[in-house]
Image (tube, rainbow, N blue to C red; front, side, top):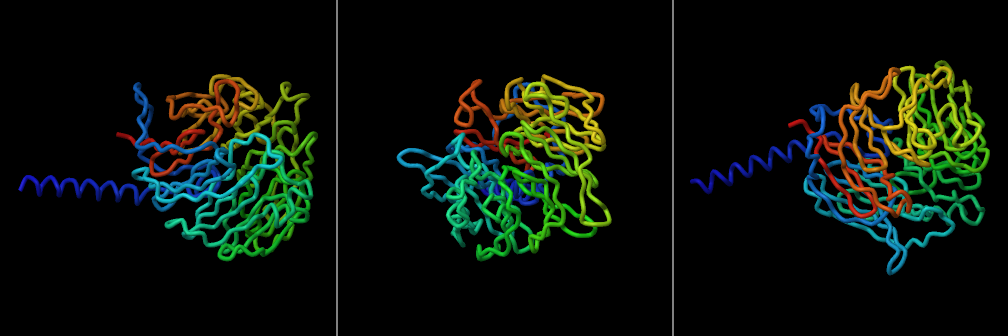
Length: 437
């Protein structure tokens, strides 16, 4: 009877755990469910314990910039190996246990890519399919549960990205955007900077813009009652019809040196904000009654060190009310007034002051969760009054493949799902509970 009771208790515990994970919110694409860095789960820690947090599980992986994603109890991430030959890999892990469910490896020599640590784009999961885009343009569509390849494309060859010298210097980086029965990609091909493929077959449905590529992932917004794909390319900020590729509006934003837009465009009401390392920040206004847009302001500093507004590189800022918060070119956490770009305050404690120093921002209620490049997770409140740090803890160690300077970095955006953070560096992926005890 005692043995049966223990077995029943174990079964009930497993069922409860399974139910908890099954009901958890997903993080199925770059920057979360709606690609806006908003995390809606409740029941989270108010502050971190003094002894820190212990991961629920950890698994070894190779190097890469790709941020993890999670959907339907499965975690996805990509990486790269160079010995005995150059390959990219796509991995799928069980969210509850960390068990590797499947993995796919394919040959992928890097040609003309700087910062070669590995793939950049997060895996997008939609309708039971996982779309993985590599740094050289290898696109795979998998059955998300089994890892079976449904279709694949060599987009570098198909769109002559290298032959036409249009490959971004850091490789293809923008994460695929799922829309209805389409997968929308930011590639940079000639007359095909933005391409939409049929989600089930991989066949091209439309192509748009003759711009150079940047690294920024497209986002979906609603304007004048219509869905609009906002794409920040190497030459413009443009709004497209997601079904046809028709250009609704376009604002020229040519770079002074090179296409270097990495941060995702962010939206608040009818305002869109973009920022880059050399070119500074631009705010655009969307018309509420037509598919039109106009530039409101553009602020660029005198140099990468002498800046007034916001010159972000990897970090996507956060738009809260009438203020924008982000990381400037050398790690300065700043608050800008949205309507003018005026700097309200600056803080130097959230991340070390270094060139391209990074924080990834996720908003949960009135709290901002900030993952910095040292692998630290910070709970904070951001307001025009300043940076109010509530708690900080180490989640994962910085490693050196992504940047062989300053003791390494953690540049990959973590996933926040099921009241957990899923973070990776160049050696491992870890899943750590953030649930209140």
